[in-house]
Image (cartoon, rainbow, N blue to C red):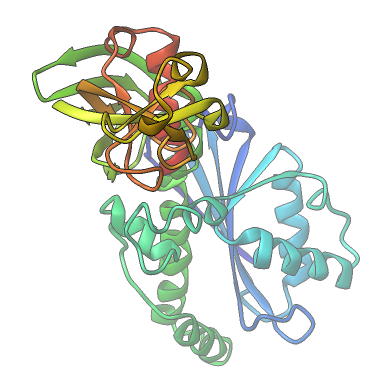
Length: 352
C-alpha cells in the first residue's frame, strides 16, 4: 500500500450537509469490476477539512494484495467523521466496501455513518439542470470544473493490470490523477445538495413593481450554477445566493370566477353569468336555467397574474375550467407578507 497526500484549496457551502465542515469525509473508489467478490479494489480516494484546507489521501494498492491494509487505513480515517459524501456511493461504493470489509474481516463503522449521495439530488433535477445525463462529469461541467485528465473506467482497469507487472510510473500517474480529479470534483459540486432546500429557505428581500410585471428579489441557499426556468409565464432566475422571480401581469382583461357550489346557482344566458338562487328567485324562469359546473361563473375585468399549481386563493380562468389559472392582482401580492411568500413558495415547490 502507498498513500499519496494532497492539499486542496476549494471553497464550498456545505451548510446543508453539515454545520461542521470537519464532520464530512468525501470519498471515491476505483475497482477492477463491479462485483466485490470477483474484482479488486485498487484505489480509495478520500478528503476531509482540517487546518483551513481539504486534506486528500489516495490509498493505492501497489502490489495487488494490499486490500486489507487499505481498508483498515480508510477505516481509521472514517471513524473520525460523521458524514460520508459520495457520488452514486449509496448504490456502488458503499456496498462494495462493505463486502470487502466483510471479506477481509475488517471492523468498520461504514454501515452506521450518515451518507450523502450527491447523485440522488442531481438525477432528480436533471431536467431542471438541462442535462441528458447526470454523471459526475456532467455535473462538473455545469460549474466549469477543470479535470487534469479524462480516462475511461475500462482504460483505468487495463492501466492497473499493466502497472502490476510493469510498475510504469506513467500508468500510476494516470490512475492517481483520475481519482484525484474525482475527489476534487466531488468536493466542488457539494452545493448541488442545496437545490432541494430552496423552497424551505428562500426569503423575499424586496418587491419591485412595473405596469407589466412584479419582481420578487429573494435570498436563497448558495447555488453552484445558474438556474433559469419558467412556469405559466412566471420567470425564475437563480444564481449564487440570489433569485429573481418575475411575474407577468395581464391588464384590462376579463376573467371568469367559477362557483364551487354551482348547484346553488342559476345561469343567465343573456347576461352570460351565474347568480345565487336567492337572487334568481326574482328572475323570470324564461331567462334563467339551473347552473352547471361549466357555466356557474361570474366575470371580472382588471389586472391578473398567473396562479401557480398548489396555490390556494380565489382562482380566475381565462376560458373555462380547463383554461389557464389566474389570481387578481391584489395589494398583498405586492408586499412582503404571508400571501406573497405563499405565492413564491407555490412556484418553487413546482420547480424544485
